[in-house]
Amino acid sequence: MARKMGVYAVLAFVLYGLFFYWYLFQFADPKLPFEYEGTKADPATFLNGRELSLSEEYSKIRNLLFFLSTPLEWLIYFLILLFGLSKAFKRWAEDSVKHKLLHTPVYLFWLSLFAFIAVLPLSYISFSLSKTYHISTQSFPSWMKDELIDFWLNYATWLIIVPVLYWLMRKSQKRWWLYGWLLSVPFTLFMMFIQPVIIDPLYNDFYPLKDKALETKILTLADKAHIPAEHVFEVNMAEKTNAMNAYVAGIGSNARIVLWDTTLNKLSDEQILFIMAHEMGHYVEKHIYWGIAGYLLLSLLGLYVTYRMMNWAVDRFGKELKISDTKDIRSLPLFYMIISMLLFASSPLSNLVSRYQETRADTYAIEMTKNPDAAITSFQELTRNGLSQVNPPMLVKIFRYTHPPMLDRISKLEEYEVKHRTE
Ligand SMILES: [Zn+2]
Image (cartoon, rainbow, N blue to C red; front, side, top):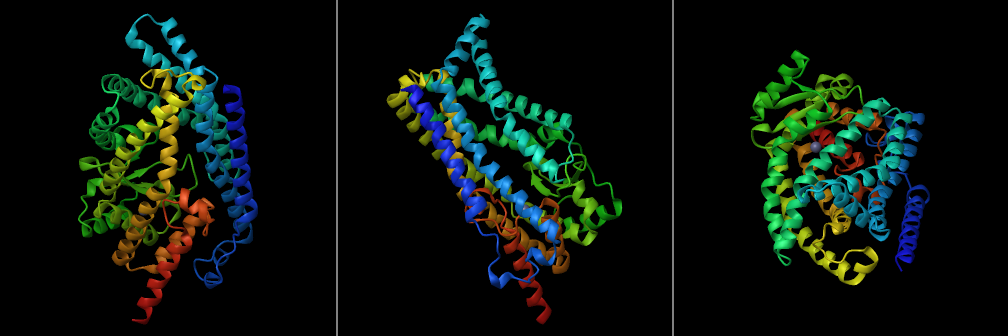
């Protein structure tokens, strides 16, 4: 029975992959709706032929990798259970160390290592793809170093969560999801608080803006938005990527606006000021806090559903999955799998909220800078640099886009430009 289930799962994954291959490469039509043709949002007006075809090609492959990677994770966890690997990891842990307290860390290490190695090929494909298209400029050792930081950071985080989680399961079979959620609230806030000062610097260097003349302009703008000056940072990304970005991170006294140095190198001051104003919009409207609130709400529901689904799966398929009891650590791959499924299923909703926030930030930025030309050209430049799709297929937008497609963003700015020209 277990073997049959494994074969079906692999088959389902292959069919799913074929569907997305067909959807992205055959079905989806990259042509713009005719009313956008020739506008400033039409990539044909600001990309050359080569850039146009590269961006279509690159986006298609990226999108396929995106849709394959998460279900691949589910498949891996499912097979780990079916083939008794989770059981084996637990046995190895019990055989290799005497002390009971160390069993969970050792089990977790083997499980994490196995999952890390299983998804590594796909991560590598993704990395080398972005090198081929000259997005990533990172060397292989530097990429590997980031992957290893990811691994240890993940391991450390789960090492805090997992023992508490299974202790709660043993203490309260019916309410562990609720207590777990209650504990996750301060934990999440703490992680958000330390992220920009402890976690992000593990990967890159952060420092105050180097260009002092530009810094003065940005700080004048920040002052207008009532943002204290010490919250604006630059990060060295040029050694890793050609893509541009800026973002808001952290909470409380660690809240900050971060600009990638690639953005600073490639855009004019006017364009950078628009991007900054956009980030200030997020900051001023406290989008991070709304995001955390939404996430916490959703995770309460998610943990409850996980609790129900885990019990159901163990009752129904416990024999095949080699889990006799939910509260046995052997069920951890099942927990990971369900969490990942729920995250994927809820991503259309969280992306929708995020796209709404992005639209708000764009509006804030254009109202503040009142320079539609700089705004539009900065978005065109972002599109060119990231080889991104201006008008992605529907499913890509729903599952992948935390920002509105550039078609919408540029069109909105163009509307603003037309409106204010005639006034
Ligand atoms: Zn934004």
